[in-house]
Image 1: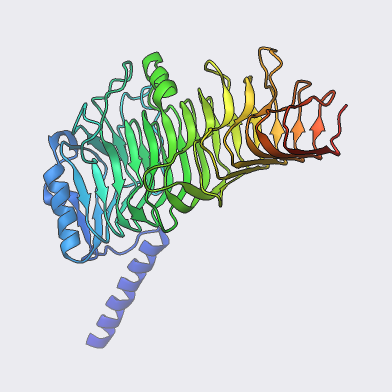
Image 2: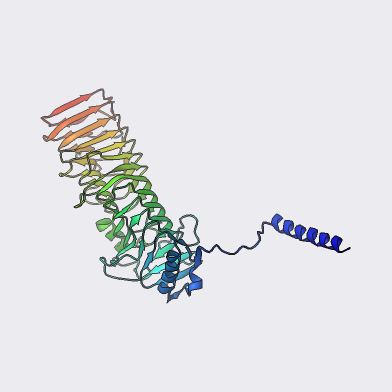
Length: 434
């Protein structure tokens, strides 16, 4: 009798478990020992109480244990100080993909992020040179959060702040993060093999700065767009001073599917005291950049390999898509790229380096009908092959200091209009005009 009773109880309990499973309910499990919740360390998430100490205590506890995940549940967390994410620790919010907020750009929207995991940054207002809001160390990750500066006025000229995130050590990562309105967004220098993936926002002065990278860094799916504010003071500042992506010394950088809108420069390549950039840039884009979508002051002889780019310019005193400066000695190759928007010129090329265009599409240059060529080369070596010039306007001008040029296999709308003033070795042929 007793045995039969226990069998019946066992069958009943199995039935209840199966019924629960059929409705998608899983048995409750306790969190792993390597998971830490900032609420357990006193974080309020109410946007009023300073949660800096609570967050750092949770991060330090995970670091002392040899690594772990620090969870920040839904809430608006005021961080009046700064945070340091120790080695092998992940600071994680609720988002599994990069979130989006309209901010106060669109009327009727919430004036600031009101859902998800939001960190409110207020430290070092007015001090661009202060320490970063969040420092990532070796194998540290920031994931699934929104970072918002509530004291940045959306209808005024932006106030300086330090970098929001500094990536240091080996293999730091920023994943699925929205940086809604930082002054300076990500300092990705002084590290190796950083990973920046799925990051959106509206950086106001600098987006991502890269320097002193000697082992390959990766930047993927970054989208800088005016989600937060399109007021006249903010957009004027962005157009006059904003730089979306800045590359100093970095070896073999990989950049994939990135975009920016409304900046002074979209992609700027500079020479720092540590050197210059070479890398692979695939599927990059820049729209409405006031001075240049891409400006190359200097790069490595191994070159900038830019493929499937989309570039648009139409504002500013002299809207030009590509500017290669007089100190350039490296190599820039643009393949299967498109250039459009009512601009002055597609490219201005100086220096003694090499610039190549292959299988590209050019449109809408010489908007004021001043007789400007789409591509103006004043020095160095130029390769223009297999491209289509879709407007019946001057296509190419070669200045006296151009050393070498190959212009072949291109399509011209209307007559061929190549102004060759070079005294160097220039080969022109097999172009098809109408």
